[in-house]
Image (cartoon, rainbow, N blue to C red):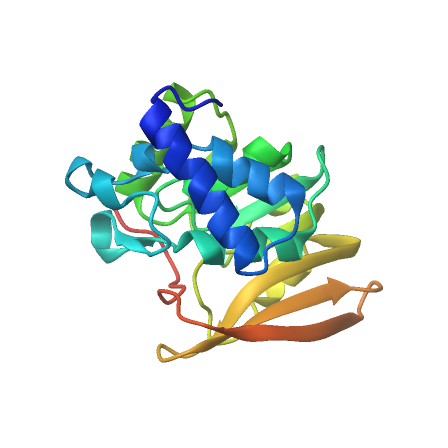
Length: 215
């Protein structure tokens, strides 16, 4: 996807360079940040802030994550084009667009029907066609498993066991784990049928991951 407006294209490139200075080094991630029109994923009243490195509110008291956080999680995935990735929490659709831009085969679940519908409309209008589902992220998509990578964009207090079982052996999950105050960015690697390895990658603040669905 290319950004039509020269002004917004310049801002997206500037944002990517800012994230690179902050330590993001994955070229595919930086190219995606510079290419995806973040302003299309925020409310029209907030478009002037779209390319600042800050989270912004969206519907249902949710947020579009800070670009650094999106880039950091994406970098931890170490995605290769063609890999099959499950995203838990479609939200605005921006993270899904970044994953699509990198070339992943994207499956994404959203528990709020309003967000599911609006993100699908936005993504398709922009030429992104991930596989989007309205459902409970804690359940995942067992019928489409196994996944090379799983990305969770909300914070569970504990790592969801059902999602671990949907990882392929050799694949990994990136998830912020913790209570409402602060979470540890965590990578869980599936090393065997029943074996996993865990590593921690800094403190972050995400909205809580909640069970069930809402209209």
